[in-house]
Length: 204
Image 1 (cartoon, rainbow, N blue to C red):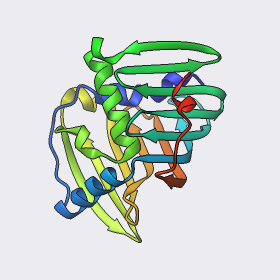
Image 2 (image 1 turned 135 degrees about the vertical axis):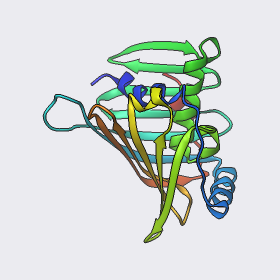
Image 3 (image 1 turned 90 degrees about the vertical axis):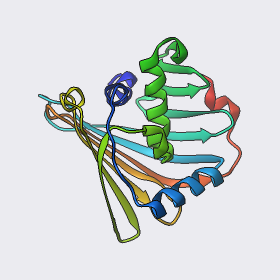
């Protein structure tokens, strides 16, 4: 599976305009955690159900975030693939081939980068307006359910569900349901905070 498939859901989100609400206490705790967590390292697993295909595709890897540098998803399955968001650049390494695109030259790609950063780090302020949002808490988890309001968005996205660990206020699970039946789940585990990240992780 090509690594560019990771970007597709966020590209569809990039043109949305709508609104939603979250409890002030949740927003405040999330913002505080975002300020405190200068770096994040964790394992991730992506399960994707593609429309018209039987079974799920499973991808695995390691996620690196440094708020002073960049973020990267380094895949172990498929081995060697990588996504890097650095400054105004999105860098993809797929099957040994590297492509680099300036987000500043393309407003949609700029929004893609923002959406990936928001979803992976839990900084929902970057989503802006554009959603009908529901929220509930159960067993130490805060769950944000987001439904797009615009007709254009609903052609592609049915809903997004984000589950946060209320102890450290970081993203545990992200589920994306596409209107025509596609389905992706990203799970993040074994998180480590505020440890030095090798700068090489942000190079292709």
